[in-house]
Image (tube, rainbow, N blue to C red; front, side, top):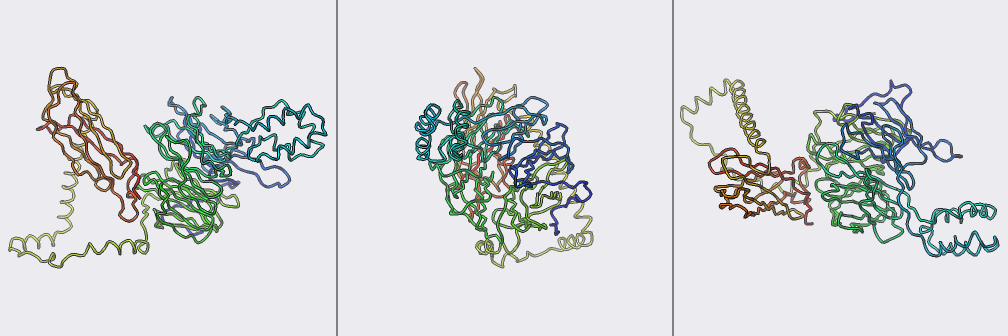
Length: 605
């Protein structure tokens, strides 16, 4: 097995017995279930060995690669998620397992709660048929069943569907047994994922996003087990969801991307109850992702293609694959400021893409059926792969790894922009050197190593002193209300308007004093030039009277790639900030310093 230099292979040959799993990507999760700081692997092992019996599933918990706990499941799960439902300390994760129309919750690996999605209203004809079936003669049953067949099969309740599949000898007993049970159409959960309620800390409370085979999208609040959002993918009853991906937070704004079995992809927002069709392909999808920064939709299809669309439905790029893509997985590398996309192909090839560029790959001996990435054990960046035969392959990301596009992939892009980098040769003309300059240059050549070393030491010492003083000054003023008693107390509030790439930042300065006037105030904005452009970063404010708020606005433009119209790969939710400092003229320490988290930009394609 060939390994890539960016990944360290974990040898599992010494494990006895070797771990074995038959699962899917959606049925794997990582969780600190014992609250001891050690993250364990959870997976649903689906047994398909005996073809004569119905498939069974078992929830398995691994410490490292050693099986530590098994929990039989009442059915085949569609997805497994680990989430926190409250903010009480110590925080204890809850395992959510979606099976049929229910979500089973486990806490401390013990059953905690079972939630069943509400049933939908049945057709009037079906209700009338079930009212007559128990009271009419058996000879009249065929006529009533024929009337049931006129209803679309997907709109029938589960017990009506089972009744139509039975023979005449079994029908009477089934009708007598289920005559009093409610007639309701309950959809099965086909996909599930988590959405954070807020993004205040590392483990905030989360909600569950559920997609049913009836096309409904629901958000379940697991603390009170209430539905806080209900929507529908589309009007088409035959469009059954198969894949979902979510980005954002529930309290602010979120986007849900839903892929259906007929190849359609739909987008739902917090303010919408019905999905908007983004694009529709004539072939089913094998993977779907909504990337967090550039808000692009990544999809892999059964015709061996890797596609990227904007949220407005424009095809940004596509990459042909050498074989069928089996599964898709995002790899957020926060320490590098990147988000890669891993694609497992049939045959054992696993490729890693940064936008459209191939940055890494390795080959396994057999096809990968499921992948999972995250903190496992005590390691932060662990990639777990489950092969077709049930073997588990674990790889750890090296701390010195680098993911850069190959030179051949960037050739076309560089060819378009290199013409502007050609300058006139006169820039190389050297000025006349005096004798003092020549002697100094000769001394630097002879003692180049020591001169460079001392220069770097002093330079880094200066940078460290300046950075420490700046951070201390900003942190001491990290508040929305000034605490300087020698001046009038001032309050600062901010509001960001726009969907991008152009934003409008409104700042409101309010004088909280009852008699003193706030004057000689200056507002300074600072942002990373690689991510945001601010035409005016400094504004001198007029005197602020007590009780009369002053509002100023600034234009902020997100930096986009001129070709792809995408934000830079180094932009992450952690560094998409703009620092605002309110200062008094003549003082080095700001009165108020605040960091504003900018919303995700939607490029105008």
